[in-house]
Length: 158
Image (cartoon, rainbow, N blue to C red):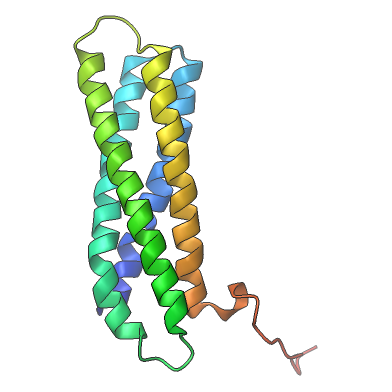
């Protein structure tokens, strides 16, 4: 297993994790601040946040594997690297915010109020968008079909 393989294995965790957390948080809001669902959401956000850090730390070894390949423009790697840094910072902020709101929530009785859920919903939505952007820029590194510059030739099987 090389650095690129490891990066590909871990980078899906934050993308999928933040999306799942977004749906869990929406369900928590629909269930009028169910504490158990809120805690589940926070747990998913923490796991996704750790995944974002893992993806960030495996990015450099992945770059070392692909940067010398003929069909990989350096600008695509740099764009992905910048997007990854922004998404990781957003993921860290969202994860820390979730943990803080969890502590505040656990100190109070009753359901989670709408304000902490709304704040966390916005932060998670932003992070989801940044993760999608980062995934898109990463996909362009090795998938010419999503670059918009791919040349397709008719196959002889038609």
